[in-house]
Every structure is written in structure tokens, then in C-alpha cells.
Length: 195
Image (tube, rainbow, N blue to C red):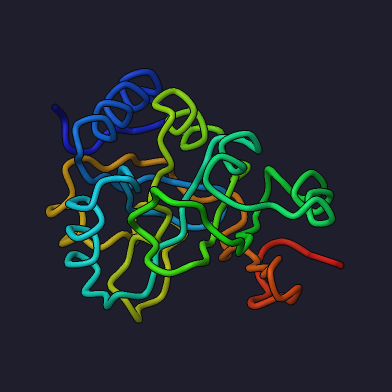
């Protein structure tokens, strides 16, 4: 398997390779609409631990990417009075914090950050595999997130099983983080949000 695949030149190969990586418990680097991510199967404890080590990260939970609202509801509790926000803002440059259901190992504790990005590539992988993807930024913990494949750490690329080069991200900014449990905006980012 090729280590680095261009999304623009070899879309089908990139899609097949990344899908296989998720199913085989591998770790890969991928573009989203906001930042570059490093991820894999969020239900696989070994994958979660490996990414934690690669990022030199403590037990702080990882957010996840899901394909659509249906998958989001499978893994998260969504109070009926909060559903409208998800329909209004997703897909888009937002991470919503919700109460999680059992199963996602990337996120110890009761709450989880979940994304349905505008970028269709990673959504399709999640949808085709039926698996939530770890959605943490492709950088060492504490370092700045990256918005271009050229800026992704060569050390991280070496440690990953696969890297998808999608050029520059659309927003070149982090996602806006909205806590739908406490009803507050935790981080202003690429998306404008109003309660």
C-alpha cells in the first residue's frame, strides 16, 4: 500500500486505502474542511492508544467524525430540543459536544465532541464502514493544528500507516466547538454559531 496518496490525483485509491485502513485497525492522516486530522476506528482501543502515543497526548478525549445525523444519534444522546441545531449547522465546520452512548473508546467519560464535516471524503469513509472515525488534529499535542498537507509533521506521516494529501483545507481554521449539554460556545472557529 502506498504511504502517501493524493486525493486530487487518485481519489478512488485514496478512498479504498483509507476505508481498508479503518477496517484493518490502522492509523491514517486525512483532510477535513477545517484542519488535517489523524484517526482510525474510534471503537478500537488499540487505535486510540496508538494515536495518543503519536500525539504525545494524555487521557483527554478525542472527538469523532460520523457520516451523518443517523450515525450521530447511534452514538450520542440528542435531546429533542437540541436536534434543530444539528440540522441547521451540519454538515459544517462545527464540533458539537453531546452526552455519549456506550461504545466509543476514543472518548473516556460521559461527553464527546462529534463532527459531521463539510468535507465529503472522511464522511464517506465513516458511512461506508459504519464506524465513527477519531477526529483529532494531525499534530503533536500542544502544537498548532495544520491546514495544509505540506505542514503535516514528517514524523507523524512516518508513524502513520497512510496519509491522504488533500492540499489545503477549505476553511484553514479550526472548527467552532459548541457544547449542547451546557449550551455554550467553547471555541470560536470557522463557523458562526447562534443559540
